[in-house]
Image (cartoon, rainbow, N blue to C red; front, side, top):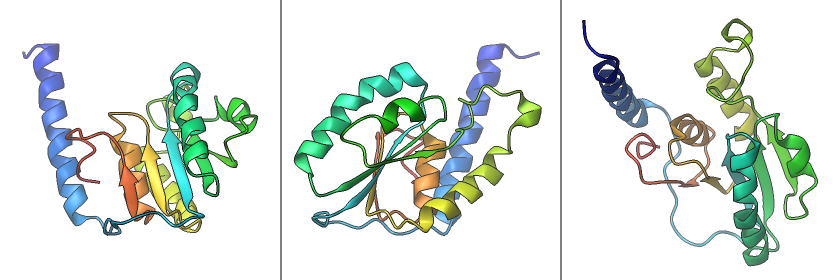
Length: 164
């Protein structure tokens, strides 16, 4: 029988392989270079719980100062939507019960990939100019932004996120 560490390592390798394949195979929008439009619509993604999200607020405030005409929409979990709705730099808050952060029993959660597809359709209709993903290992959020057709996607340069 293999050790738990070996099992986690094999699982991580398998996931990385599948993410790389998905990044090549899924119908995603090609990345766009160049400056953002003056009135850019930005999607800021922070799936974490409240404490981590609070650490992101100075970055959001800085974005507002740097891009005063931009529309800043934050995609966050329901656990932090109320706090975000009160922040003066944020124009809109969209709620998504991100897999891995939702504390409901497994039997009451939507399947992560069904949720991915429905959320991608919802976001696609909003036609964001760019997305910023504030969590380093948020491969699900990176895939969501790619499937949503966001032409400029910024996040951490880690293997799980790179395909998107």
